[in-house]
Image 1 (cartoon, helix red, strand yellow):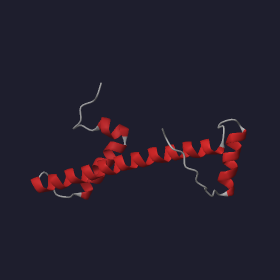
Image 2 (cartoon, helix red, strand yellow; image 1 turned 60 degrees about the vertical axis):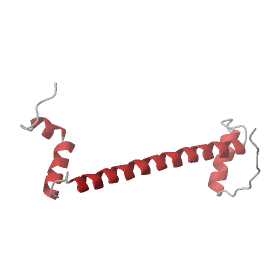
Image 3 (cartoon, one colour; image 1 turned 90 degrees about the vertical axis):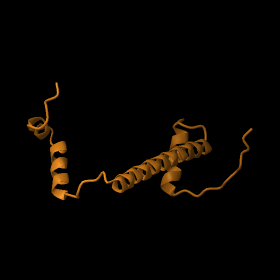
Image 4 (tube, helix red, strand yellow; image 1 turned 135 degrees about the vertical axis):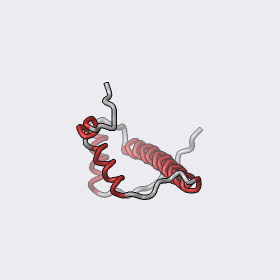
Length: 103
């Protein structure tokens, strides 16, 4: 069984009013319910951030592995800019002679 611990928190007037308004509107039974839901959302957000950070680290490691294995082209910023422009302009991609049209 979960034990319950009482904590005292301090909120800004604006947030305290938002909590009272949500309870008065019947969205929550108590201010504790509002805070519990906010904390569940916070834990969920932190878990997502940890997952995204792990994915970013994995991508960086794949880049390092590609460098170590020699699977990298010379850095050409103009090529990168041109590729970005082609990908961000829908009509440019379909008008490109090097790409077949999708049906």
